[in-house]
Image: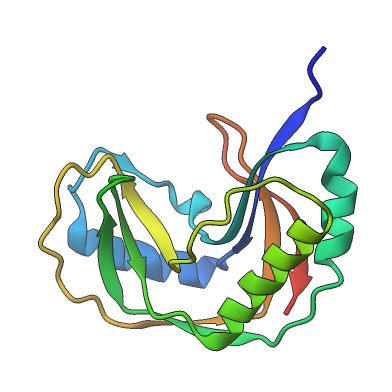
Length: 169
């Protein structure tokens, strides 16, 4: 019998005010695709862990809880497109503090021997999937997001993302 796994990632999880502001900006590019990301799934991925043994969840949470970084402001001020993934997003330049958090998470998860894809960090919130060609994007009004916590999220197919735990930064 195969060991049970859980599809996990660390993310900045926006509050309702930020979600509403992202929805307003998404309306500027509405119609790019029928695959609109539901607002309840908006997030900024810090580190994607992928499928991990369920038996490691407590250890992952314990190690994440030891991370200490400063809170930070993040400005979402541009739309973009990842052609390989075929997604349109809202993002911006990564402040040093968020890069430090990503680095600390990567080091911590590597330190407990987790196998994961350490992708290059491109801070963004995915708005649409299955965007076939590069859109001509308008310039959105900048959105200031004060980030004071990060979360461990579980992705379960066909369900909203589940926040498993949050930690202050």
